[in-house]
Length: 414
Image 1 (tube, rainbow, N blue to C red):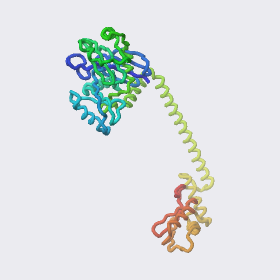
Image 2 (cartoon, helix red, strand yellow):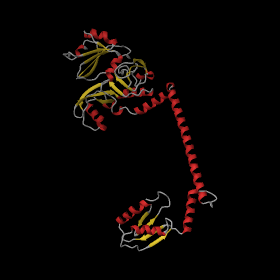
Image 3 (cartoon, rainbow, N blue to C red):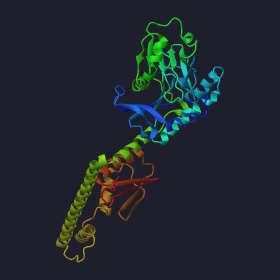
Image 4 (cartoon, helix red, strand yellow):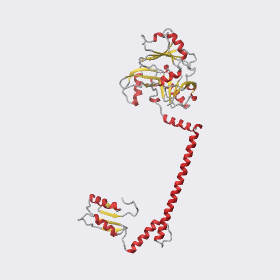
């Protein structure tokens, strides 16, 4: 699965007229990115406009360390629908900004009742950045911080690439939180915790490596933009929570797949599908023609049988119906009862009628024999049906009357 990781420009706070100050302005400038085929190795990296970013299966946006504030608190025991409001109530006394203007996100290991970290970001700015990316077809699946609180102490030296006046910054992350400050000034070194852990990890962007080593007095590990972005994307954090939770990713993938299907590279596949569709249509038409031909042959055979058996029939309109009528006439002229005559109905009723309960009323009309049977039980009716219905008879009961008949069409018996 291919992965595209994007570095969102730092949100400018003190210079509202400078580049990137307006919400969504960052995505109109060039963005740093790295494209990975598997989330581990680097396929390509660089900077380009948002509309020129390469396509990938998943997209992750990385925020600058200074744009995310981390707060330690006890995760409230609240339902999912009210969790954001509960977090806002706890943080109201800990933040300087209006808590309603902040976007809040819980750490990946947050559990109700346990202490956890909460990330706070300017909601209007982040919403505008994500919306501006979506306008050029880049749908962000995850938003992650550049650095986050961790038991492994980590100091990273960097220079904001979108700053008009670059200056080296140090972001310090440990189990106590994340802080960012410039190297200039006599107090900058005093902001580091004392004593420093022996296993502290020191890294730096290529542009900040030289001043970082002079300031620190020891070598640092140089991380290119691609390696740094991939490292951030591999964290468990996802800041797209609550009102910014990612939605409709499936529709976006389907839309992108449709666009890709119409590209010249997929032309052989499109031609193959069209050929397959035409072949299926031709096959269906040939099969339908064979079925019509076979049906016509059978109809002709039935008509010929009617003319051979009953030569007095001159015009054949409905061969099966005419055959049945002619056979009924022959049977009646020979004095033999038909299936719906009174004699077969009486014989069938006598074979299942309960002993000792003679019917009080007997009526025959249009192939239906009705017998008055006051007091006859449901069990006796069930036994009648079990015996006669498999032979094609039909039994109906209404009030104190049982009606016996034989359906005139195949399959009409229940």
